[in-house]
Length: 168
Image (cartoon, rainbow, N blue to C red; front, side, top):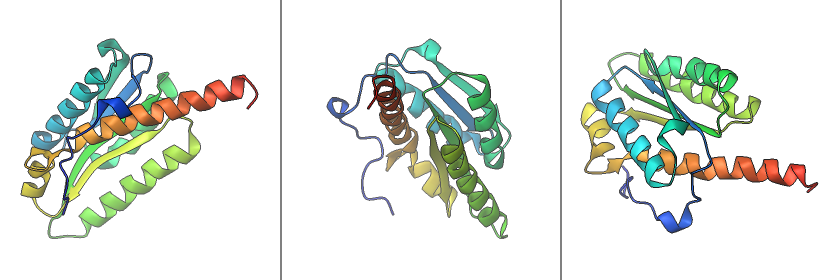
C-alpha cells in the first residue's frame, strides 16, 4: 500500500518545463480513472512551466495499446518525454497478468530503443477502489507523480544532448 500522497511535489526541485514538449498517451479503458490521471498530469506539467501547445494527447482503446501508441508518437512527434496512462484492475482470469506484463515490458523496450523517455503511469490494482484512491482519491494522483518524472527525465534527455554537442 502506498504510504505517501502521490500528489505532493516540491517545485524547487523540478526543472522548468517551458522549453520541453510532452506527449501523453491515454487508455480509454476505465475512463473514470484514466481521465483523472490525465488531468493530474496536464495540470502538473502546466504548473511546472510547460506550454499548453507543447502537450500532445492521444487516446488508445486500452492499456495494452499504450505501447504502440507511444511508439507511433515517438516516430511522428518531436518530444522530450511521453507519459503512458492506463489502468488495469484484477479480475477473475489471468488476463490482468498478461496485460500488465505486456505493457510493462513494452514500455521498457521503448525506453531502451528510443531516445525519448516513456513514463509508466499505469495503475495495476486489485480493486477499483485502489485505482480511485490513486487517481485523485485519498492517496493522491499518480498522474501528478508521473508528470514530475516526465519533466525530470526531459531535463536529463536534454542535458545529454547539450553535453554531446560540446564534447563531454
